[in-house]
Image (cartoon, rainbow over all chains, first blue to last red; front, side, top):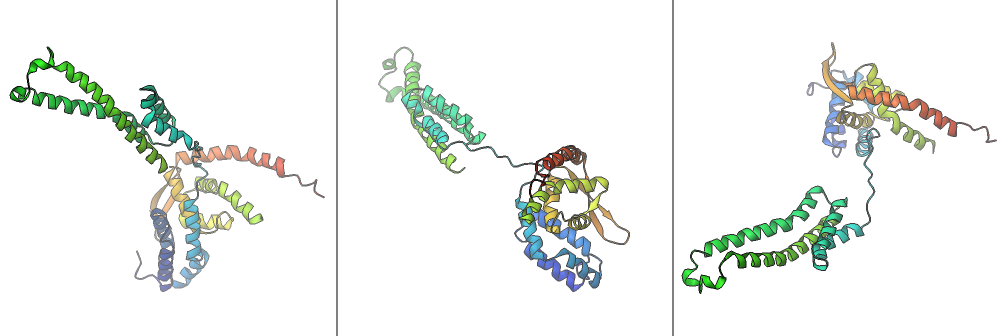
Amino acid sequence: MAKSTAPQVVRSYLSQLEKALADVPVDVRDEIMAGIREELDRLDAAAAAVRIETLGDPEFIAAEARSEAAGSSLVEPVDTTELEPRWIPVLAALLVAFGGVIVPVVGWLVGIAMVWMSKTWRARDKWIATLTPFVAVCMFALVFALIGSASGPSSGPGMPSTGDFGANPLIPGIYSAMWSSIVLVIPVNAIVGIWLLWRSRRR
Amino acid sequence: MTADVGAQLRKGVVESCVLGLLSREPMYGWQLSETLIAHGMIASIGTLYPMLSRLRAQGLVSTYDQASDAGPVRKYYRLTDAGGEQLDNFREQWGPFTRTVHDLVGKDDHHG
């Protein structure tokens, strides 16, 4: 770089240009600066002044760079997928939230299917919405089983008698876990549905 | 608005013109800018570089540094294979396209 030895006219032009390009994307700004610097490098003041005259006003160059950098390329057209009507994601989210209460299982399935067909959510959000109730139930069952096994051996003095639970002590546990899961899934899906609604508003 | 029509037309083809220029020989930024400005395809060097970064991001052009005998080290732009294909594609469509446009708008003998 001939920075310090460059004629005053070059140094002041480059600093004006750098200032004007402040809000242009950094890679474009660097390329413009490098391209112009290499051209003005090693020129004497008179020759540099002629070059600068042909380059033009830094503000104009920056304005052109801004609009060109913001504009889309014709080689790769902008993806213009049409937006779906607003009611589709709203209905999908509401069905996920409450569909299972109105028509057990099927209502929720329809909601999830609509979520997957919608362009509103990213794949990650769709997976979260689909898997959350299953994960919640599994975690609940796990916690339930841990509590069950932890309290099992030490139940002697605290519990009335193992006889009260019948021949197989696991059966009431499974029943109660199933019912608890169903009760658990209702609020979980309500939360997931509301979360989906919230995510769809950020689009 | 003649100026607007010209600007719109240039916008559609200037990238292909860059590819066309680079298909003859690798060029550095200033050289490209002067040629395009001289032909009225761009208004300033400010238009050129965003376009070059885009063409590079799409893999249509690549760059290399080369020192000149007397002057500075320059960044040269050259056409990639993909850029060559893109240019061929444009050339194939350009002829029929201009003929079609000419057929549709070229006759002004009805105005009188």
